[in-house]
Length: 75
Figure 1 (tube, rainbow, N blue to C red):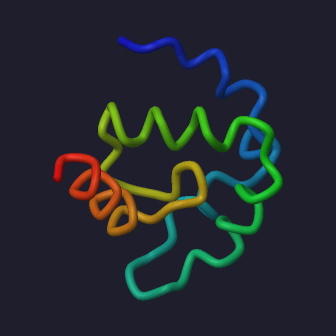
Figure 2 (cartoon, rainbow, N blue to C red; figure 1 turned 60 degrees about the vertical axis):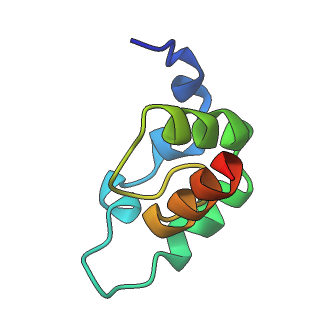
C-alpha cells in the first residue's frame, strides 16, 4: 500500500467528497477548480496513475484524462 499521508493536506479534506465523484453526465468543473488550487495536486495525480484510481476526480483529472496520460507514458 502506498503512503497517502499527503492526502491530509489536500483541499478535498474540507470539501464535500461527492463533488469528486459526480454522477454520470455531470461535468466535474467544480471539483477540477478545487484541485487547481490544491498544494498536493501533483502527488494526488501520481497516486491516481499508479494505484490506479478508476473513479472520481484525482489530481484535477478525470478517468479518461488519466487513461490518456497512462497510454502516452506507455508509448
